[in-house]
Length: 465
Ligand code: FAD
Ligand code: SF4
Image (tube, rainbow, N blue to C red; front, side, top):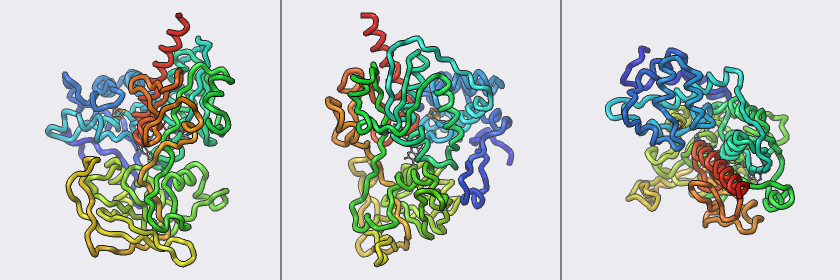
């Protein structure tokens, strides 16, 4: 199809029916021709408002201009100056509500495809020999708890500033949600492994299978193991449940459990230690990114009917628009305005269906979204052999409960200064989902970066005294 200046250059994708049954990446990436054409669409506005839409203020017109003139090394350098995880963010950022929502082109046409261009530049960078610059110049050791995007970025920044850094990770592989949550068909693990390889080349040590708060405590890191400061990047991995009858039946899982078992523990392999059984019909409750990942994974695991069940409408869903479109193309069924009331027992302790009620939308509630109201007499049963809950997560209290003097809010999120990440405990910083509750990769990465600089400032001040 001929490309048009008024329209965003479409991302080439794999054919829906073929891709819906394997875990290969769906998006194929721009060619050089696509990228140059799309870069030409950028207006280079005097006041580039797209930059305000990006949580880490990527110099968007500058990196796009570098693509336009063929200076890929320059584009990669500009991008990385603001965003430490460009290949990941180019793939998973909700651009439609961030940078691209602000793009001046949206006044008349489609926005510039900032995310697709970001991915193009970052993938070019990955095809080059890695350039690593970090020199140990500081004596103070820093501990980072959690190897998700906030912890990885914090560790990378501190290593660049000259500190010896150790990341302690509870699971057996680093990456956090990027490893165990977001599936391979959206974010290939080789992209994550490349970033982690850079950190290791900079001297960052990653120790897996260590739960801080259980294996060792945070206070022991500071007082016994000699760390001068600690960054908490433990995320929000504790799943929430609805509290409806039947949630303890066989065949019911949280999306976190389901995705972790498939992505991290090879649950798709019948010979794995904990294989995942997926029935012919799977209902996923929720409509955020986690729900879309779970439903599309269920389809790839063999479900013949994979369904979203959500009590509001498509307008209120939290998933990235691209994920929603891809799910629809792959044949996922959407049950909007449908509230689950009970998970039905087949008589032998396994799930056989989901009793639901239809809803209609009323006035906005405290979240600002239209309130779903039950419609009398509209109950019905959806057949389902698995029910997967993707209705939100909160921080795991394990670390906070075992750390004296660390303040949390009512939801269990660590209280930390917005600019520096400093918590109620001296020399202990925090960022990412552990502080904000479930949010986004770029917000977590930004918080990790800010905290690294705050740690550096504090330690430099203490050395100077
Ligand atoms: P996490 O990524 O959760 O990492 C925390 C790490 O800390 C984990 O590895 C955990 O094992 C470890 N840990 C926890 N407790 C301890 C402890 N006591 N000791 C040692 N280690 C510990 N965001 C987007 O921007 N775009 C998307 O498309 C998107 N899709 C998503 C899909 C899914 C399925 C999920 C679950 C989330 C998605 N998100 C998405 C959200 C995004 O992934 C998170 O906001 C982000 O990963 C948060 O980063 P973090 O570093 O704070 O925590
Ligand atoms: Fe847009 Fe995310 Fe890149 Fe910022 S980091 S420019 S929000 S894609």
